[in-house]
Amino acid sequence: MSNRSLPRLLQTPAVILLLIWMLVPLSLTLYFSFIRYVLNNLRRPEWTTPSFSNWRGFGNYEFVLNSKDFLFAIQNSLLIVGSILFCTVIFGVLIAVLINKSFPGQGIVRVLLISPFFVMPAVNAVLWINMILDPVLGLQGLAVNGINDMIAGLRSTPVLGAFFSLWPEFEPISFRATQTSAYAVIIMVTWQWTPFAVLIFMTSLQSEDQQQKEAAILDGAGAWSQFRFLTLPHLGRPIAIVVMIQAIFHLSLYAEIEIVSRGNGNKNLPYLIGEFANNNIGAASATGIFAVILANIVAIFLLRMIGKTLME
Amino acid sequence: MAIVANQTRFGTYGRPVLAWVVALIFFFPIFWLVFTSFKTDADAVKPEHLLFFTPTLDNYLNMTENYDYWRFATNSVITSVFATVFALAVGIPCAYAMAFNPSRATKDVLMWMLSTKMLPAAAVLYPMTFITKSIGLFDTHFMVIVVLMLINLPIVIWMLFTYFKEIPKEIIEAGQMDGVNTWGEIKEILIPLAWGGIASTALLCFIFCWNEAYWTVRLTTTEAATLSKLIEGNRAPEGLFFGRLSAVSAAAVGPIVVLGWFCQKQLVQGLTFGAVK
Image 1 (cartoon, each protein chain N blue to C red):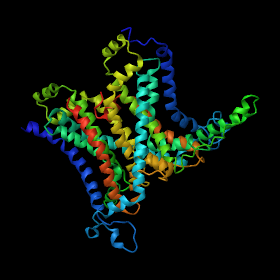
Image 2 (image 1 turned 180 degrees about the vertical axis):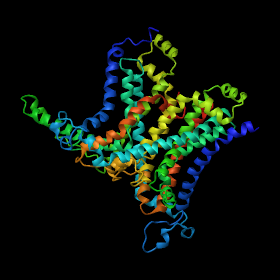
Image 3 (image 1 turned 135 degrees about the horizontal axis):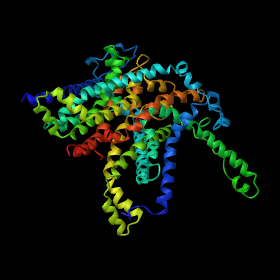
Image 4 (image 1 turned 90 degrees about the vertical axis):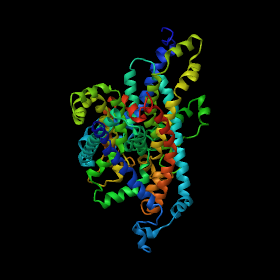
């Protein structure tokens, strides 16, 4: 008996640690979300210490639901996550199918492709927003200037000049502005996570049934119908997993949003929580509970899927 | 087999060319970061020096002066290494128990561990600040190590579990016959056998710790601040310091990108929890 029980006891440190890590902060969040709790309030100093006597019921939730930032943050979270998922899955499938066959330098191509995934988020954002997307000094600004100069030069050519004089001057896009900062985040995160999708789809493609493929070719199936009727269904499950894992990661994007525009015109739920947490802890906690609910909806599906393959 | 070999013109020329173009596009921002890091701050913003300039190592040599790079790098190394070591110290016995002495609850425990990973960090932002400040651990290496270890523990256990499961049970049982106790089994049989798996788990855990950008930024100010915090603190130079910022960024990601090249395969397993094979 002791032969079995000691080994099983070995799980306990990990279980206890994770239990504390999950339960203690979360129950505090839950508690704070039901009380009035602010960090600074000169008129009501009693609100600055957490206590059951400041009970507010669902007041914080109501406050959060009624703030216009909340609706915006939800919409924006969904816009950002949805766009990133769409782009990474499309690029991921295309690139995985492209590099799945062997060709000269395949190993190096893989290494180059996977590299963005290991760049830390802060560097990713700093690099893109300054060196690449900056409207004046970044490559984007320089490229737009270059195009404008080229068009200006072509205007004076004899025949084509008339055509090019119809062209407008291009304006570089400022990605720090309120309307566009979300797109900057989408671009940089797509760049970072497409490699992840590629890697997973490639792994999955290697287990594709080659005999089935040969049979299809013998039957005269073209490249497109092979892709459409064999490869794509085979990738269904990995696509679902990529979507869910990324959804969980990207719902809590933070560093990129902070660096691009400090949340100006581009908030998501974690960012809104951070803003509330500067003073209104009650509201921050209520928003946190909403974020947990949102993440759980995705997580349940993901866990079910993983659970199926677990004990095979 | 000849049929399967791609004999179209696209297969011979188009595919490699296109693949290389895509790979170079994806790698370009990293290349550009390193490229810019060899320019002076003045050259970095001059269009006439976009491609041609006198390369300089000053940005790297002055990293300490400009950004106190080594202090942040040391913090990153300390916190990532210790978090990885502790995660393994807790994770190996746990994964061992789950792989070789599974109970009916094992599957549920594993799933539950994963679910802790899915909790949005921001939801517990203030409680964590509150707790760490009230026990006096805010901005300490210890706290960063503990948090990094906890957020990576589920992935570590999960990966180790999948590696351990592939070791035949008989080998471990043979050890029991020889009268080796549990610790002996782990130390003398399991660890040597699963060495490769443990190493790649450690590598991946180290990478995740190094790149972590929420808690390391939120739970530190100066003492235990890591490279993520350093870069985030210098986020928006508006063109003033592109050269030096590129150098310090390149120095922050360089070692990890190279490490990452060595564990691409394990990455799939680590990130999909074995659901994609």
